[in-house]
Image 1 (cartoon, rainbow, N blue to C red):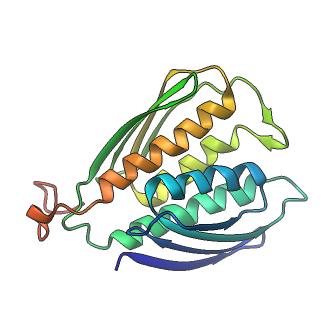
Image 2 (cartoon, rainbow, N blue to C red):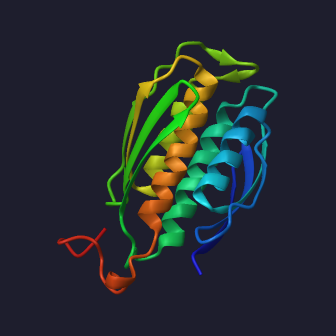
Length: 195
C-alpha cells in the first residue's frame, strides 16, 4: 500500500494530509484558498490519487503560507509513499489540451529537485488568488518530492485554462511516473543503484 498520512504544524499553518498513490481519484480538500482547492481537486481526479487535505492557515494575511506549505506537504507525501522507488516507471509526461491552452508536463523521480516553470502568467490575480502562488506551490512540491518537473505552455491565452491544464497534465505525468512496472518490480530504474 503506497499510502501516507502526515501533519505539519508551524506558526503559520496546520496541515493534515493523506495520500494514496493507488487510489481512484477521491478527494476532500480544504486549503482555505478556493482556487487552490479547485486545482488540487483536478490534480487528484486526473492522477487517480486519493487525496485529503485540511489546512488551517493565516489566510487573513494572504494565501501564500497555506499554498506553499501545502506544496511542501504534498511533495513529502509523494516521496514517502514511494519508499525505495523500486519498480516505478520513474519518468512520465503528458500533453493536455484545455480549450485553447495546450500544456506539456514532464517529470523524473530521479532524486534531484528542479522546476522549469514555462507558464505565461499574464495577470497578477484570478479572483482573490495571487497567480504567482502557482509557481510557489510547484517549487515547494518539486523540492520536497525530489523530482525534476518541466512545465511547457505550448499554447493558451486564458490563465485559468493554462493553470487548469497544467495541474491536469502534471497529475497525468505523475500517475505515469509512479506506476509500477511489473517486469522490473524488484529493481530501480537507474544504473546508479539509487534514486
